[in-house]
Image (cartoon, rainbow, N blue to C red):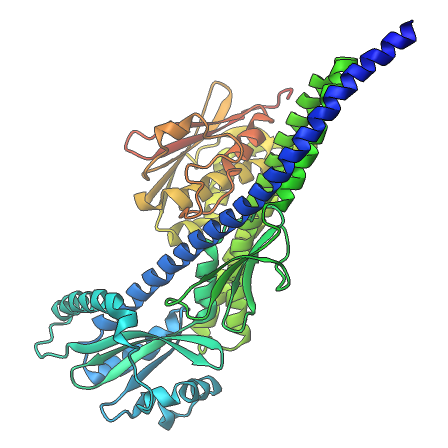
Amino acid sequence: MRRRTTSQFILLLLVPTLVMGLVLGRLLLHERERLTRAGALAAEEQARAVANQIQVAVDGFETEIMRQLTERAPLPLAELLAQLPAWAQTDPLIRHAFLLATDARVLWPDATNGLTSEDRAFLQRFELLFAGRTPWEPPATDTAVAASSTRQLMSQSLRSAKRKVGFSYDQNPTACGWLPWYEGRNLHLLAWVQRADGVRYGIEVEMTALLARLITAFPTSAPAGQALALLDGQHAILHSVGATEFQPALPKLATISLAPALPHWQLVAAGTGGAASARGLLFLLSAILCAILLLSILGGGWLLLRDAHHHAIEARTRTTFVANVSHELKTPLTTIRMYADLLREGRAKDEARRTRYLEVIAQESQRLTRLINNMLDFGRLEEGRKAYHPEALDLGTETNRIVAAQCDRLQAAGLAVSCEGTDTPCPAYADRDAFEQALLNILDNAIKYAATGKQLHLRVSASDHRAHVQVCDRGPGVPAAHQARLFQQFHRADDTLTARQPGCGLGLHLSRRLLRDQGGDLRYAPAASGGACFVLILPAEAQTL
């Protein structure tokens, strides 16, 4: 009798479960189709958003270049001939400069002083244009709006330039343009101005440096199973993001042309659309059915769901962390690679320029080292493996040493640094490296967010058996809405694709953990004169941690 009752109970459980499974399976097929369409639509929207960001970046760059070109229009020919090459040598976004006489003779690059291989290639590339066999301006229908705004900018820039240099004669430019030019299928960008006296001058854009600017418009990741790639006119991959490696054979979800800003260049979203999401939903529904059955039989399904929920949160946190770290590491690596390529290709023609490039590479390498140290310490702290080696320190001496090592970076950011109390002994008991890393993170934040305040003040003091280092700036400070979450991991006030300052939200969190683990603390308070104050606190003597 008991066996029969048990069989009936199991049957009563299995029948509704099977019916529910059939119904959910049918719904799942429809949902999978819907998710596929939704995934393709989302991929297209993301590609359009990135295309818009690229268009904005190119427009801003074009406006700035044309402004600088038109400001030079009133200059005498000799001074213009001297300024253009100097400008091209100091600006990494400019590959070549040129100057044509009224009879279309090339005044620069100057063949009489000998041409480099780069100069010869440049003149050969634009031979038809410089000889007048190809028009300088594209059809008016393609550039009507842009030409109107550019001419207005020219007029304003020229009037301002004339007031500065004091020219009395009229050399207003009669024409200007932003010309895409092709050598085969390779895109080159040329900006030019023609003065009223017939002299024409301009610059060729360094496409490698421009590309380094454009890739910041890309998101840190793409949906699962998808990839987003930037292709040139030869369909070569210039840059791509996504968990899936971009391959030409992948199904195309969306193709967005970047014309007219970058003719023949495309943004292509490819992958599986929403199929991967549908498979994930199938797994989730199957898990729910199994959980219902187990709950009816064992009464413990809610534990499985709770564990699954916790694992999902941890997985999302890890994914976000990896994505942010990848983006942060990619930024200095891109800069290092760009300047290394410029040095390797010999485009730095003088020693000063090569030295400046090497300084940038060294600074970005130091930044990369700090990022990696933060990531390693974060992992050790989360796993409880961080080891400290506390010792007796003079906090004033240590603060002076760290600030002196960072003085060049702080001054380059426009910050005037002053220290108070560093000459008076201030004993502390802490791990030297941990304190240095915490203070460096505070100084990095000052460089990123408080450079507009122009001043940074450090004050070392001691009270209540504790040593204090107060770091105050005169920047914009921390918005009130973000102060409560200031020390949370991964928290940033600006976490959008267009954020002006890089970061992954770990610096302040790590600094507080490093200090608290040693019996100290890190606190924030708004500065009395505007800006932000961070106080690093350490024990003055050994104690049990």
